[in-house]
Length: 151
Image 1 (cartoon, rainbow, N blue to C red):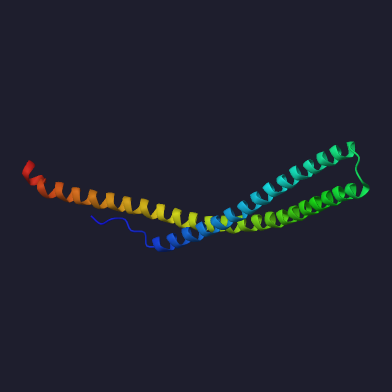
Image 2 (image 1 turned 90 degrees about the vertical axis):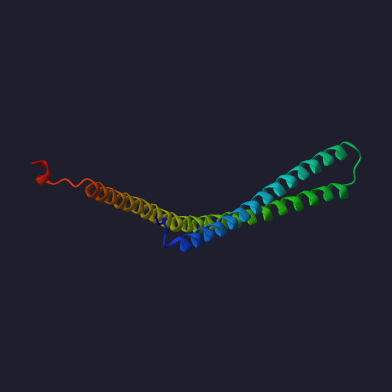
C-alpha cells in the first residue's frame, strides 16, 4: 500500500517557517515593550525615593540650591518617563502591525492545512474503495455463484 503524500507539503513547511519568523518578531517587540514597562516602574520608584529624600531634607535646614537640585532631578526623571512612554506607543503600533502580518501568515498556513486534511480524507476514502473492490473481486472469484449451479 502506498502512503499518503501531500504534494504541497514543502510549501506548507515554508509557510509554517514564515509564520514562525513572524511570531519571533512579535515576541521580540513584546519583550521590548515589557522592558520599557519595567524601566518606567523603576523610574517611578526612583522618583518616589527622591520625593521622600526631599521631604526628609526639608525638615532639616536645607539651602535653596539643594531644593532646586531635587526639582531638577524630578523633572529629569519625568522627562525620561515621557520619552519611554512615547517609545512604548511606537512599539505598540509596530506590535499591532506585526500582529496583522502574523495573522495573515497564520491564515495562509491554515488554508494549506485544510487542503492537506481534505486530501488526506480523500486518500483514505480512495484507499477504502480500493480495498472494497479487491475484497469484492476476491469474494466473487473464490466463490463463483452462477445460476446454473443452483438449478
